[in-house]
Length: 152
Image 1 (cartoon, one colour):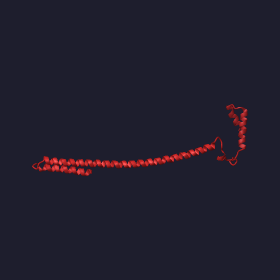
Image 2 (cartoon, rainbow, N blue to C red):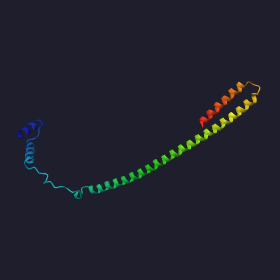
Image 3 (cartoon, rainbow, N blue to C red):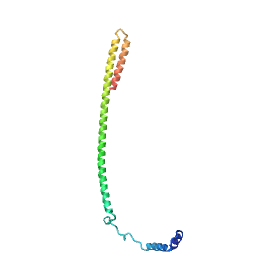
Image 4 (tube, rainbow, N blue to C red):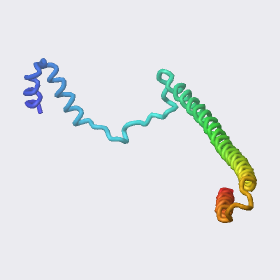
């Protein structure tokens, strides 16, 4: 051991006294080893260095405060989610109602226009005209009314 320390220390240019002390410390550490049973365990209550106990208490208080605030925020978040769901459902219902009303209005207007067209056709066509023309017009009207029924 001594040769290894002196050889390495040649490169480091460490004084001889320091080398001797290092060797003595190394040898002492090898001969006087402590077992784990010899070490005394320090309890947390015994530590009172620079207010560590108070800092630990403050940290515990802070964590409790953070937990409480997090719980409040989570409940607020749940309330917001419920409100958003309710608003989405009500907005969907409102949109459905509005669309149904718009469709009903359009159907009524279409029916009125069909009635007006039938009246105009009847006025413009006299019974002396060809029966085929009346039949084709009646078929067109029937097709339009069928389409209107399908849209309902």
